[in-house]
Image 1 (tube, rainbow, N blue to C red):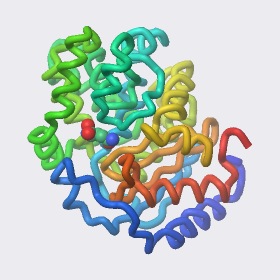
Image 2: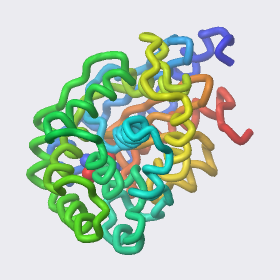
Image 3: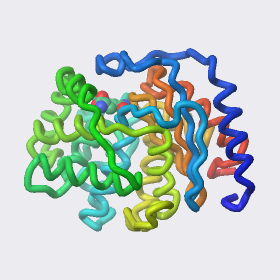
Image 4: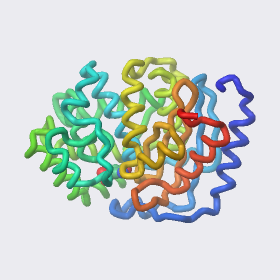
Length: 312
Ligand code: GLN
């Protein structure tokens, strides 16, 4: 497929954009007040191939907060820093919770293994595992890793950071509960703050597709050609994304689309087709599970049209 004529990619993205342009189902996230202000009609799509071809439709350059799409990338960084695949199994867990991303119950139910890196509890635990002297260095390492994945500089959206930092009582409770169980590996307040900052990093559909394409390309950024993530850790990250990328809708996504992907409450989703490409979409309106309605539909459409599902 990398050799097919590029025209088909342009055409399919435009079709997906046109097909769902009028779809207004869902609502912006509002538990982070700043996210409720993002214009709901924004809708962007991007596709990046492993040989570095980039295709876009709609608002592909609008900068929104990465939110939970950050989680697999921090998990990847932890794997690489420890150079040991068992780190995530032993210290966080890799079982899908089948529960919402911010579930406290999941932490109680999984007290001995503290969930997985793609829900809030496991994501804060992953942040706490990043080796660093202090919180500034911890955040810098995470941001620089995302930048290498994206092949460009990234910035925190300060309004989103402040808005979430002022309202993240539930994540604070989770971080402290993890502390009680000995399942967080730095000061819980510090892990919470770095996690909140990480979630406020600004990306676009184009940037997410490039980050995903780095995973699709065995950890090598298609443009910079740098080996950002060691190839042997890519399948680990993709396995997490396939089993837990959509929280309590992960099974359904795997059933219907069959691609490792990750969503975030900022409205972004990136799906990875190993060895071939990544497809990203952005639209702020979310369903009950906190997944972007149009982004899901658009990626599913692109996947069907191009026959991308892994199990076909
Ligand atoms: N920062 C958000 C939170 O912790 C991320 C959640 C998400 O994208 N699902 O609630």
